Image (cartoon, rainbow, N blue to C red; front, top):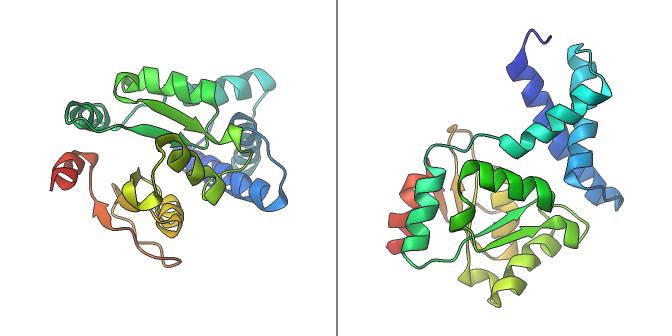
Length: 196
């Protein structure tokens, strides 16, 4: 039992990203489910949480059922209805990402799922953003990249995409690298922004 579940999850997520970045620097790729497991064991040790292999596997599998933000499905459906093509570019594995999309009810609005497994490195490597330009056959400047992560917004901006950073929590902007073109509070603002 964890006395501070929010702190536990924050540690887990922080270490999950840290291990992904470290794997890229060390050129030692493991898929994101494995990275998530390593990060979970670290969080358990840090917060004094007893964990066995079965419990760890269940928690890693729970990433397939993450609850979407309330505006996600509606916004993606509106973009599709407007004739825009939407892809998911994720550090996640294909199976976990596909399950999460189905659970969130957004899979019908997505025309492509692009995962880092095919290039063996994590965002913000340019090799990952290359997946999008290759898939659509366009230059980076012809794409709008939307992310909830400031570091991902920086990576895509450096790559040359027009970026909309969804800063839901009102956190500070990244201080390393160029800023995104747009900063949004919710995804609900995206259709009007793109229409303009």
